Image 1: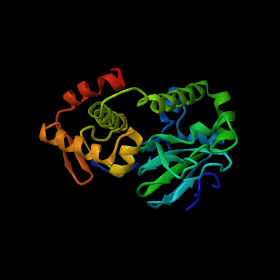
Image 2: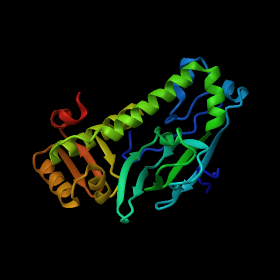
Image 3: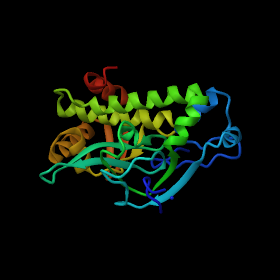
Image 4: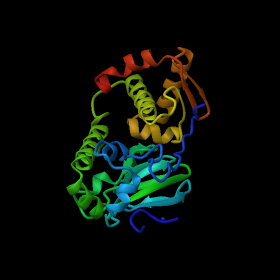
Length: 251
């Protein structure tokens, strides 16, 4: 295993395929940008866009730590990554969860080190992108540069998502609906998936008590909005959940 800073029917727990000589893997975070410019994998190799597959990272392994020197971003190929910081009093604050096809390390671009920790919640595989090489390539591929800007914008949007004065029901519904949409756009099930993150991590991220998260999930189950069996979740009434989430997601 290598650290990022050192550079190594649908299912509820998705994993990417590896594509082939021309076709990108199923969760490639940059395939849309590259294909829009007419590039396939072989043409990117000619442009010296080096992508390094690293992992596996096992549950509890750190991919990078706060303060590590920044030299790469990475796309999740399989598994779930949690980012977090620890305040001076030793309290953990969860910043987010990253699924297959999503990119970690974007918030380090403006400085020379990673501003948070990233840890594997299950078995994680990554595609590591040297950021200096990606910047060079983006100068030749305007579509890639625009895609990077979109990823940065989305990352900022996620950070601000739960900053308002929302109820526990609205926060939980927004969390589930957002997960549903993130899985859907990568070709996985939008209504059945595995919550690889602990309830305590979800509560921390949503700024709720762990007991509140459990209580809301039980009530959602009683109201037939979803079914929960341990970490396996099936959304039974996505429309009603979207209606509950609308004040948070604003759509």
